[in-house]
Image (cartoon, rainbow, N blue to C red; front, side):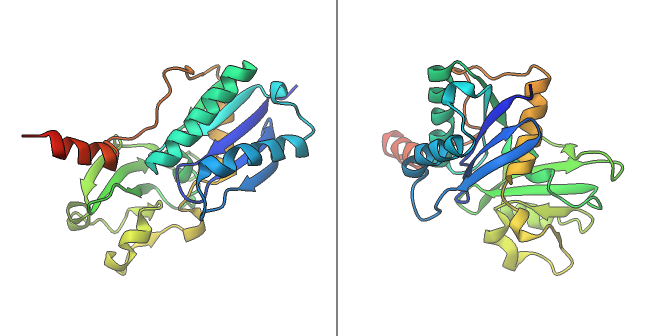
Length: 231
């Protein structure tokens, strides 16, 4: 039987909950961008499970986006995935958000920069590449945080652009920019499912106690606390 998957994606405001059987996406609920994911996540999960006529213990794995993205959103999604796995005994499979976004780029994109807001005029950045349209885009660089001014000063018009961070910098982009369609700047259920299912079928699992958000900087609250306590 094809594995039954619960998918949680809360890295951005446009989060969602979905269920899939194997590669077939069965149902999905978008999370209200004007409300906190913590409030909507459990009811949305209950709704998609009910629509599929599944009980929580019917799930083989919970697939969860691990960022980068909203600090609070990522914590909510990952803690929900851990709680669900602990209660049901299912596996946890984390998906790097930038990997999912990269797979949504058009085939003519041979090099691609994915951006997300890192605050303070900085961005999470990661470059992906491939040598033919039939290949998937794979990471060419490690995820890192850069000042936007540095990234813009090293402009390369052969590189395609995508990611939620573009919403903050679109007015500063050169006119020759090759930009992926805006609806694809956030991770979509089919790409998260594709990556999560692939990891699950390869036997890859994440530990319920060790999985953490892919977040390279402290939260704003932690930064403010550090600023107060630093002599």
